[in-house]
Length: 138
Image (cartoon, rainbow, N blue to C red; front, side, top):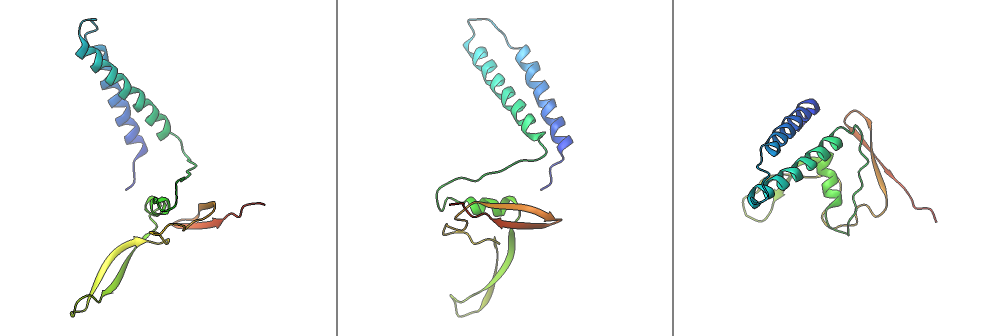
């Protein structure tokens, strides 16, 4: 799914303006706990929107996946970079032979230990990813 950056930034700006207007219209009397909580909640949402807006304006991101073996780092990478494919296999569990179609990761996943050291994925030509294995220095 391709995201239109300008449209998204405009939507974020519109939402920020709505929240700011709502915050300005909140009754600031000290006795009204509900209004105070509502204001604090909206201020929190506004701070988060500002942070999302800042992140969204970054052109290039350095992404690191850190986790224990088998938690799904490689699976996440495959889905993030669309490293998945359509496959078929024969179903031998019944007397009637049939072909099952399924979608699976292009990198080996499921058991863990796919990438046991630092690996860099980099785009070298349109629609091609190059995998570089980086060996640790002793």
